[in-house]
Amino acid sequence: MSPKDLLALLPILILSGASVIAMLMVAVRRHHRVMHAFTVAAFLVALLALFRQPDVMPYFVAPLFVVDKFAEFNTGLILAAGLSVLLLSYNYFEQREERKEEYYILLLLATVGGIVLLVSRHFVSLFLGLETMSISLYGLIAYLRARERSDEAGIKYLLLAALSSAFLLFGMALVYAESGTMDFVGIGQYLKGVSRRR
Image (tube, rainbow, N blue to C red; front, side):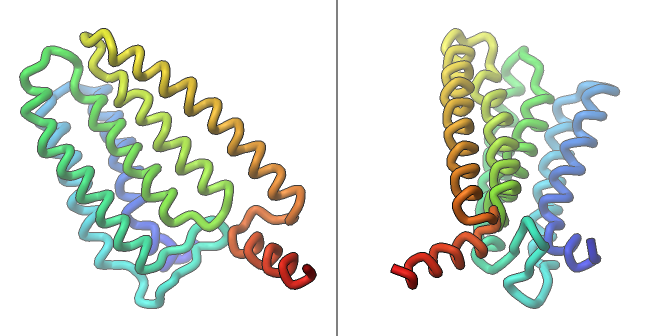
């Protein structure tokens, strides 16, 4: 990958790296306030990284990603929403005795999955982003173990998401079998050629 490719994917790289560091922080020593401050800092740095995007838009990171103004704007929205959730959830978790630190790791990973979905131009990156976000959401939904319905909601979401992922993969396989490509641009060109033949 070139330096410009890394620059285009900088918000994703920052949040991915932050989630790994957050896991190591939990393994070494649990501290809710430190973990919260670190996660807020990671979101702020990712937001600032949006201003360091390549000048030429859309920018293609072949073969999986494309970064354009639409993706940049919506990435900013996702990061702002995640930052808002972080700021609102600190006092909520301070009043609870449950383990709090893993919540921030799950929130970081869910945000990474959402941004990967935005910049995808290939079925592989689309599926990876969707699963990264979905698996994090399983944990977030069932996070409050003290509540009876949170476990139930997490299991229901897990079953529904697993079934829908299987259907999605089957649909991707059918599209690939018909068009011979998993790239969105290639699929569009194939459909355009089919419509012309008709």
